[in-house]
Structures are given as C-alpha cells and as structure tokens.
Amino acid sequence: MKPKSEAEVESDPAHPELPALLQTPPELATIESDLSQPSDEDYPDGGFTAWMTVLAGFIAHFVLFGIVYSFGVYNAHYLDMGVGSPFEVALIGSASTVFIPGLGIISGKLSANYGYQRMILLGSLLLSGGIFLASFTKSLALLVLTQGCLFGIGSSIVYFPALNLPSQWFKKRRALAIGICASGTGLGGMAFSMLSDHLLNTIGLEWTLRTTSIIALVLLLAVNPFFKTRIPPSTSKIDFSVCKDARFLLLMAACMLSNFAMFVSVDFLPIYARDRAGLTVSNGATLVGIYNISSTLGRILMGFLSDAFLGPLNSLVLSMVITAIANFAWMACTDFPSLALFSIFNGLFGGAVWGLLPVVIAGMFGAGPQLVSLVACLYSVLAVGNFFSPISTSAIVSSFGLFWMVVFAGSLATLGAFAATTSRFVHAKGLFSKV
Image (cartoon, rainbow, N blue to C red; front, side):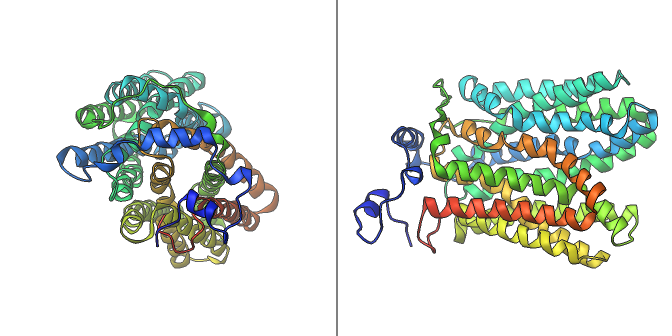
C-alpha cells in the first residue's frame, strides 16, 4: 500500500492537520526537491561500475573498522609496556572513535565540494600515515595524536563518502548495496584482530603497526579508482534547515541512543561472560566473534529484506525493536549457549541498523550530492556515545553491578527504538506502508 502524499493527507477530512513541528518546513521541501531531481528516474541499479562502488565501500569498511575494532589487541601490549594507566591507554582508541563521526559534517562537505576520489585518497594517506608514525613512538601523547587523532581524521574523510556513494547508483537495491558495504565492518574486525595478535607475537609492536599501515594503504589505493560518482559534486552550502524536520531529529535521537547501547553489549560482553556465567577469556572472545559474524550477515540480510519486502524505515524500526528485546533478554543469559544466542540476535539486528540508516536518509531526503552531508550530520551524534558509553557503563558496573548494566543497555535501546518508530509514523502514517 503506497503512502498518501502530503497534499492528499491535508485534503482528506479523515486526517486532521499535522502540528507545525511534524510538517516538512518549506525550506526543507526545497532541499528535498533539489536532491531528488532529476536523477531519481535513471538509477542504474547494477552494472560493473555500480557494483565496483559497493566493493570499494566494502574494502573501506573492512580496513577502517578492522583497525578500530582490533585496538583491544594493542591495548594489552601498551599496558604491558607501561605506556599509561588503563584509562590513559584507552584514550588512544577513543580518539579515533570520536573523530570518525565527529568530523562527519566536515568530511561530507569536503567530498561534496572536491570529489569523492580525491578526498578518499587524502583520507587513506592520513589514516595509514597515522598508524605508520605510531610505530616510532612509545609516548602516550604522541600515540594519541598519531594512532588516535590522525588515524581518526583520515578515517572520517574516507568513511562517509564510501558509505553513501552506492546510493547514487542504486535505488531498488539500495539497502542491499549499502548492507554489503557495511558488512565489511564485522569481517574487518575479525581479520585485523587475528592478524594483529599474530604479528604482535612474531614481529613485535613496531613492525605490526608498519605492516598494518601498508596493508591499509595498499587496499585503499587499489579500490580508489572505483569510488566513482554518478551525480556531479556540489559546491552549495550545507543547509541545516533539515534539523528543523521532526523526522530527522527523531532519527538523530535513535542513532545516538542505539549507539550508546551497542557499545555496552559489545565492549562488556566478555566481562559479563566471565563474571556472570563463569566462562573463560577465550569463550568471551568467541562470543565477540559470533557477534561480528552475525553483524556481517545481518547487514546483508536486512538490506535484502528492506529492498524486497519491508522498506528501509520499516526494517530499521524492526531491527531496533528486536535489538531492544535482545538486550533485556541478556540478563537471563547465564551460560555459553544462551550468550551465543544473544550474540547472534544482537549482531544480526543491531548490526543491521548501521547499514539501514543511510538508506533511510536517502529515501526521506533524496540521494543527491548533499546526501553524504546529511548522513554525516546524523552520524555526528555518534561521537557522544563513542566517548561516553564506555565511561558511563564502567561507572555503572563498578557502582551497581552487571544486572543494572544490562538494564541500562536495554533502556537505551528501547528509547532508540521508540524514537525510530515515531519518526516512521511521522513520515508515513499507514501501518502497512512500505517505507
């Protein structure tokens, strides 16, 4: 059932006039028109060039988040070396996870103005250079600047154009295309964690960092020619009037709350497995591996279901609701099989959220040259969760215990699902609309 247009809804006596906050502002209507015309009619939805942008995006996710999620391996080595306290060493990894989303608006604007390939090349050099320079120091401050800040800045410049580019080439299969791109996150996390652990034990810290830097640069340079745009770069200013739209504000809230909850379940799952279920460190690592595999599959599966049956916004709401239920079910998990089942559901549906959000934004506001800036604006709130979630969760565990940590995660996930559901019904009131 196709949702009614705004004009039809306003003229239908069965539908009362929406409150001013819930209506699309006039200035936003102009943006939507500019973004979606005239290119909505001629998406290739396939072909060599289109699918190569998907492969390039997959490699970008594989490299960036593979390095981000493997930092835990370095963390132990830095502590053994006496680089700093656990909190101080954690600043190295936190810097990158804050810079990646925090600079999203800037990186999105740079890509829109100067071209995706050019900016991705610059970002590739910066992020690999940050890792390479880190191999020459054992100073905490310099490690934060190189492996943290410089890597994070370069990663942000690469990430947002790589994530959003397939939206220029796909419409009917857009969710599947972006889901495949985003699935590189889970596989990269597994691959780089295993590689880093092996190299650290064989060739040492310095050459592990240098090798990782070279691998990252070679992979990103190899796919750079395939980051081709279909829509010419835009030199127009970012119009922040989108932030007046209730749908966008609600999605921003859902994004921040879900990200906050995700870090609880990912970062503290091994601790929960050890202290609540009496499992070994190896069991905890296996559970994280199960989560990563499930996250990879979930991004592709929900992308397919979104394109074929549900629509991206419905798929996003469904994923967030199931993730919230899984987080509350977590408190009943007291052995390996139950924790493995939790990891599967949390990975499948929690991971799918991050592949669906760009598709939702493209569907609401168009897939034109400003899309990367709109997604970057939405994702900028992730910096809040990236920085404060581990800190606040640690405080809750220390003061109240693991049970209340799970309640905290479930409550955040529930609030995120509620915000996304509200955004969905503001956008289209029909219960069975494919949106």
